[in-house]
Image (cartoon, rainbow, N blue to C red; front, side, top):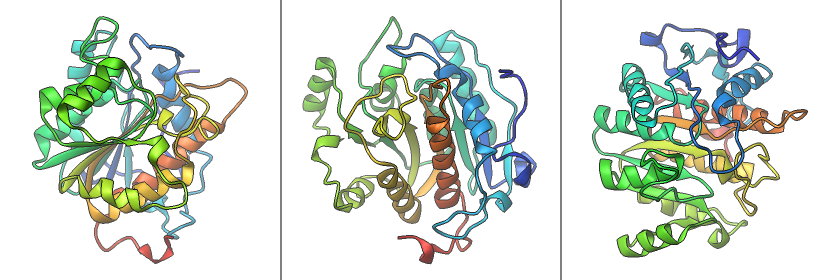
Length: 301
């Protein structure tokens, strides 16, 4: 596995565009520091990019050829293993590509990468909130010796960046996080309270968000029957169709300025998790990266 090798998202079938003219910029990030359980997310971007070359570029729901969207995949970012300097390098890299009318989609790494990415979005766009799809609330103030650990992402969003946020799919919670949720009056969408037969909760979640939204997708937010390749595969998660529908509704009702997919941990001998992650990335490109008037929503359910 050569993680230094450049790979274009979608492979050779995708029209490569210069970064300053691209509608979507894909930023691969190779970062993993102090994982709490299973390891491997540091190479997640490589496996998602490799799987993406096996995707068909025609979206089956909309009949949009996302391969003609005008994508730019950057060189891989290796920010190092120090949490403070690493996340600052991620923030600086992200800011170079964030701009109105362009979606920055970051791939890979442990969930801590989102701290730098969300900070960049908050500096670039006014009136920005965060939609978090995750099994965990990530509201610890410090974990494994760092306030910039993957278990502290949303605590940094709440306390440091002071952004509004909505949490979806939560089903594993620490006592410290439970106390914080109760004291702050937070209202996560816990997985056990989501009706699997009705999607009205999605509109309620989106209603709580401001005009501009940063979407962070921790793959353990999905059920491990869908994505087993993640560091902490918590049972009872969201289905693939639920996540796609949430992405579709979000893109239709809010301006998604940036997004990330994180915590992919390759399982040797299986391609299910990385292929699903790549497919979700394509759905984000279709539903959140297309400019107004380009996407025919009639094909969507």
